[in-house]
Image (cartoon, rainbow, N blue to C red; front, side, top):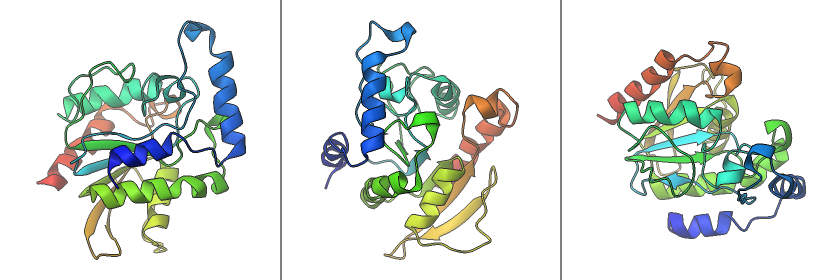
Length: 223
């Protein structure tokens, strides 16, 4: 299966009734600022370089961000913090991302998520995350990345679950680096990072300098 074929499957998924109802309700009612726009309102596939050595895994689409634009981390404050950092690190062709047709190109990087539908209060349930896990597993199989950057604890723990890691030494902390091995004994690096949500960026828990260090470390691991 190719990433294009996988993404075609992702956007037709209706497995989680709660998430289907929520994403479609948000797409119908819209936020006042976006009343003139047509919302995506479907599961959001991954995007980026199909030969990427770096896989970035986030949490889930924002109700009025990716659920509106149809592209991961686009159209909300998290993307406003993420893409300028990726541009500075040489992974993105431009610092701004507004939608699927904005011309942004990722180099050596693919961006995905733990859940593909916008969840109420940004909180997918464990069962909903489990329903989505096979999409992330297949992305890992297709890309076989050297480095997996987990943005947030949920993404970090989801990667550990996929690789069946139950080692207490594998703890989530910003900048923590762990080796993981898949069923084919292929080694990967798992790099943990605070999620670039406003809850973290506006409080100073995640600064520009801290975020830039993550992408510098990613570059070093690729060498």
